[in-house]
Every structure is written in C-alpha cells, then in structure tokens.
Length: 604
Image 1 (tube, rainbow, N blue to C red):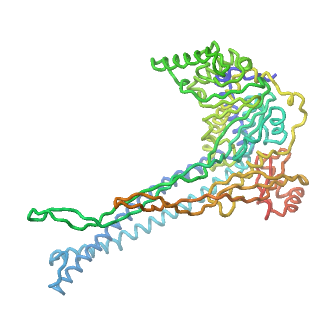
Image 2: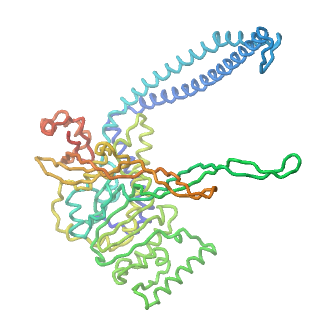
Image 3: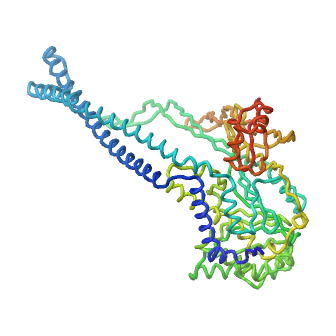
C-alpha cells in the first residue's frame, strides 16, 4: 500500500531527499550503461579540450601583449616622423610659426627612433604576431576536432534523454505523486466539472509550460504562464529657449551700466502613456472536494523568519493581540474566530476565511503544527515563500522559489560533450527539481484531510483521455516560439492563445492567435512657463501601442507513449509517419517532439 505524505518536512529530510538522490544517481548510471559511452575515453578527450583551452588562453594573452607592444612602437614611429617633419619644415620655411621647434640633435633622435621602430616591427613584432596567430588558429582547429570527437562519444547518451525522465524519478520517490505525460483534456475537464475550475483565469495569459498529475486521485497542475497587463510608461522631453534681456554691471570706473544679454533655459516635461507589460509566473493548481465551501487567501509573513530576539517576540505578541481583538469583535461582518494555536494564526494569517467550521475541519491541530513547521523552516525547504488561495474546491499556490527555476526538464538541458559534467548537472537538476516541486506542494501536503479525501471522479474513473488540452496546445505553441506566430508588425512580446480545434484523422488542427502590439510614434506638446514669462510647448515623443494579431494553424498529434529516440527513428522510417507528414504537406524535420506530442506549424 502506498503511504500518504504526512509530516512533509520531516519526511523529506529523513527519507525522500536521500531516496531521490539515490534514484537519480542509479538512473543516470543506467543511462550510461545503455548508451555504451566509454567514460575513460571521454575523460581523456575532455582533458585534451581543457588543455587546449588553457593553451588558447595563454596564446590569447601573449598575442594581446605583442599587439599592444606593436601599437606602442607604431605610435613612437609616428611621433618620430612628426618630429622629423617639423625639423624639415623649419629648414624650408624658417619664418613659419611652428607649435614646436626641433633642433638637429632631436631630429637625429627622431630618425633613430623611426628607423629602429620600423626595423623592430618588421624583423621581430610582425613575425612574432603572425606566429602567434598561426598557433592560435592551429589550437582552435585542434579544439574543434576534439570537441567533435567528444560530441560523437556522447551522442548515444544525448539521444537517450527524454521528456519524462525527471517526472518518472519523482514518481518513483513519492508514489503518491502521479505525473501525466502531458496535460490532457480529460484532466482539464475533471478540474472543470468536479472542482469548479474557471477558465477565466487564463484571460490575458499564455501557458508556457504545464505539468499535470494527481495526489491520491486529486488533480494538480504545475504551470508557468506569460501574463499580460497594460501598464504605464513615463516619457520625457525638453526644449531649450532663449530670449534677450538686460543686466546691470559696473564698468572699470565704478559706474553702473546696463547691457543686453541672451539668456537660455531648458524646459522639461513628461507624459504618462499606456505600455504593454509581460511577466512570467509559476504556480500550482490543486483540486480537492474537502471543505468545498471554504475560501481564504494567505500571503507570506515576515514573522515566519523571526527568531527569539526581543523585537521579534514583541512583534509576534503584538500580532497575536490584534488577532485576538479581531476575534472578540462581534460588531463587524467578519466571522473570524481565533484558534488555540496562536503561532499558526499569526504565521498563516488567513483572517479572511469565510467558514470557521470548514477551516477547522481542514486545519486540524496536526495540520496546524505541520504548517507552522513548514513556515518556520530555514534549512530544509524554502520556508514561508508562498501565497495560498483556496476558492471552494480549487487551491492555488504561488511558490516564490519556483520563479527562477526551469521547470520544463527538456532533454536539451542535459546534452553535453563532457560525461562528468553531464552527470553532475543531471543529478543536481533532478534533485533541485524534486525539492522545488515537493515544497511547492508542501502547503497542500501538510493537510492530512486532503490526502484522505479522493474525488468521486477518480474513484469511478477507468479511462484517462489521450487528447491534449488547450493548456498543452498553448505550451506547445510557445515551445515553437513566438516568431512562428507573431504579426510581422508586432514589436512586443505576444500572448499565444488557442482559437479553434478541429479533430481530424489521428491528429488535431489548432488555430493559434498571437496577440501583440505595433508601435506608432507620437508627439505631445506640454505647455511650460519659461523664464521669459511666456508659455512654450515642450515636445514629448512617445510610442502609441496599437493591438495587432495573427492567426496560424498548428498540427498536433499525440503518440502512444513514444520516447524521443523512438519517434526520431519512426519519423524517418515508419510508413505511417511518412504518410502523416505527406498528408499534412510537411517534412519530418519541420516537426517538433515534446512530451509525447508531435507538432508543427501548418504551411500557409
């Protein structure tokens, strides 16, 4: 029987962290065995590349030094010729006023410097630099050859990397976490119909990546989106004005006089105009039928990082006192009633909860203490870095620690010419990914009722649909890149959205609309009072952003669990795949394989 993940912090520290590291290490060594890569031969080749890198660095430094010396010598030669020219000019035109007079002794010195410099450059510097250039070219060629050799040695391993590797390792470590090969329409429909998920959440967003799965039959989605909103940009302009005026002064005899002067002033102005803004956000959506009418929102608290100092103790005490006062206040609309675990109330601080009975049903004394441990943790996970929103049966968690982490686990991340470096990166990435995902889910795992409660949809489910959802379609479109869809006049990032899907014979046609903005130069004139007592129109140039969109068709075909390596072989040799590409009027090299799905932009 698969155990539930109770006490998630302690369980990660005492069991999961080491188990996942072991699973990852064993998996990678098995990949090496399957690939047949000769580790010793690759190490020798990489050592040769490192040696060549050091020699190239030395050659670069030496070449730079010799070139600097040549520049100095050329400068001295030029200076010497100028000196000789001044000497000759003084002999030819004795009456000419020169900036510098050169006598015969200095002229002889200049001649010696010029002759010696030319001789040194021709006989020593130029040959040395040419030799270093040739050595540098030779080293580069040898490095390219060694790099090609290393790439060839590692090619069998690089071909084995697949999209589902990290997900499979996580599921092996924590069997309660089941990760899907891709976000299916059936999984999305489950969120809609069983938990009340509203797709209005996706307005002004484009899905960059989504990893769906379930925890004991309850669905979750780890996602990254590109979010759009219209912000504001401040543009600045200036205008320099001048005018005639008079000023008084005293002449040499001490008498007061007036004179006309020209005065200048630079006037500055600014205007605020709309500006499209785009941000990337990562979050986790989780559906659970427990406490179905409960809503609340909590944000990270700076009290979670407090220690035992006098100031922090006072802050905690002050926060608890305010919560107690709020709980005693029966005159407002809040139904908030403080619980006995004051530390939990102060740190979790979900005072906007709408149902005290359901909140207590969810946050039992055990759940409260586990949440406090998670929030106060400074060493094992990431501490209190998450926003947690419950809207009836839908939970959304925004963990800050995911912001800068690449959650795609794309095979290209692991490809390397150096086996030792590949092993180090793969192990580090897999362990970091597991830690990031685990502690992203940890606020949900602290609640025992969530794992004890399975959805009705899961209990009676028998077949999981194969058709990918529009979330996955948007992610695939973004994987192809905005350049494949953007309007030619767009100068901003683009929000890629699905418009229509048309199932066909074994594949789906998806219309992708790219929403962006073109720019039009504008000028506003802002009146400013100048020092001349007049109003002046200061020009301020700005960009007006006008919406543009372009729609393209993308072909999507789900595979029956093919690996990347299997697909690459079948795409070139299988009659079925050849017929598919012929039917769609495209070539295999135009298609991309991503998470068991083949896709390409249909020819226009």
